Image 1 (tube, rainbow, N blue to C red):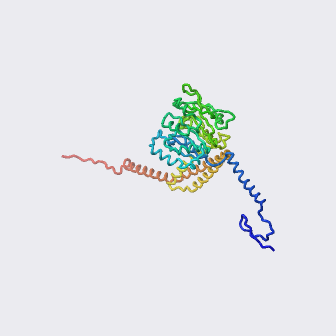
Image 2 (cartoon, helix red, strand yellow; image 1 turned 45 degrees about the vertical axis):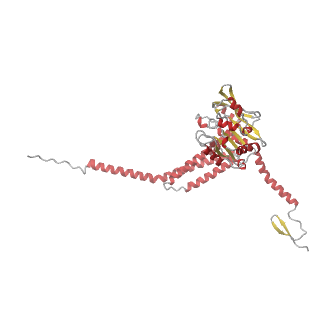
Length: 441
């Protein structure tokens, strides 16, 4: 008889009873294992290729982006799929010293190129590039030219300290607007305009869905400076009825694909801290869908799937924002009643369940299951109302002793004053009449 031997298998050592037996894992079995691995990887690859990745989109915004006046932070925070970072590199309205701006860049701008290309999208709002060194500017250009990073820019400034460093840098090569023509035209006034959407059927549905929602009927739509597009760009929307002498219209949104990986780069004529981006400046109650347009531009540039029902997505974003506001008010209420000794453990458990439900809705939203996210948000809103009712009831219970003490204090004071008044003024217990005396000589 032949001696038993031990054969190395993926699961460890296994003893063979005889050398005449075949190995359990043979060439055919390895083929089946390889097919299984490919089958498992295949769906993941398809998800990534279809643009439905659930990961957040990281945005780096640079320029005059201070939240004190810029709407960019609000635009990014209103979209659950976005994660934004602000790099203030221009001082306007809020005065910063040069050392403070250098400090902002040192803290918030990525310190290596690998860190920079972790961002999916850049936003430029009139940055002053003299605060950046040549290496950082080269990184920004390389990210767009070689690594597919998308961008949106407004750089139409009348101030030489802004447009001169911009024009002398390498960055304008990647953008679809012609800065030199803008400067030569010398039309720097910010003027109102009406919008005209390009509804060409060959264009993706970045702006076209909003035409059906009637944004062309919102007049004026925003405030802009005159912009010129380079050759080879795509014009998505046009500003019309301009009060400029010699210019009745100009491009409002233009883009092109640039570089080795065809980065989708955009330019806008509407300054960010003016309407329409900053909708609160109008106060006319008309919806301009600034958040939705900004989100569609970013989603398209990052090659994510665009929402088919923009109105549903608009409502879901509104529900996300409402959840944040209501949660802030609820926490303030809990903090108030805890000062009076109320036991909020049950409410804390309900809040934990609310946050869990909200995370489920956010996960559905990020995976672009918008109908599922809407249904979950409706559940969240209904449960939130129940939690708020419990909190109000707990507040009443916690303050009952306060009300009782106040009632007793007021009642006691009134009783004492009434007794004293009655005793002194009615019964006149302490009153003694003046006696008369006879005068005699």
